Length: 287
Figure 1 (cartoon, one colour):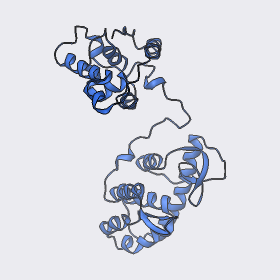
Figure 2 (cartoon, one colour; figure 1 turned 120 degrees about the vertical axis):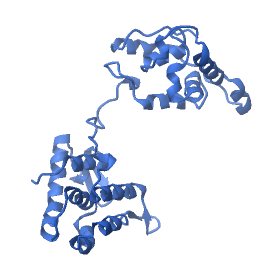
Figure 3 (cartoon, helix red, strand yellow; figure 1 turned 30 degrees about the vertical axis):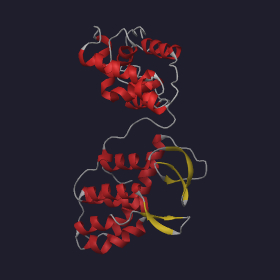
Figure 4 (cartoon, helix red, strand yellow; figure 1 turned 90 degrees about the vertical axis):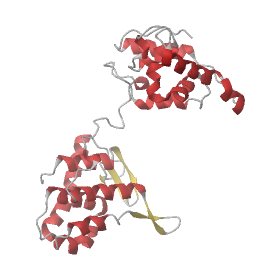
């Protein structure tokens, strides 16, 4: 098995994604990191990486046989990813430019392999995912390192997320949790009002530790929950705006939407769980 750059391995893992069970994928069953598989075949991350490397070996064998000019690590990585995704036949279409050493033209021609057949229309159409992948592979060929070559997450699809985005070590929760708060019922409850009225960064400045705003800020690792005080100045204004949005205000009058009451029992349970996970004592829920 050949030795491949970690940047390439990381890129393929992130781009392909990890599937622990094989599924039908356009022309074949695929599993792990996008490798050929049997129907229903299961993969561990270790098995998935081994199969990824085995398929890279096939592409590398083609390059060894057909490329007649020296290649840098980046040029090799770009072609390996290209062949891993499309097959070696499409590398063959680039061989005249590769063997002439015209890598600028190679990278430009790679960008054109971004279309797939639309089964409904029977025509080729440009896909955003393929366009992005070809751009990243061209970045490799041109001596750069694409963003997706950073170390992949160790989390797999089968791992449960920490409750409500709160980590056990007391670190900030997933930013997606804040987006979730903002999305609850549009601006139809106080949680959505916080997201809408303050934006994500403003969450930590909303009120003091004796209010629901401060409690939420403390819960997500913000500063506002522990500062105390009476919510004066900018923090007070932000908190007031959020309360107006959450409780109705002009937005409710104009839209005619019914506001949903906040479930304080659920919120209290969340804060209690936060405390039990070792992130500090939760604050009261004064509203």
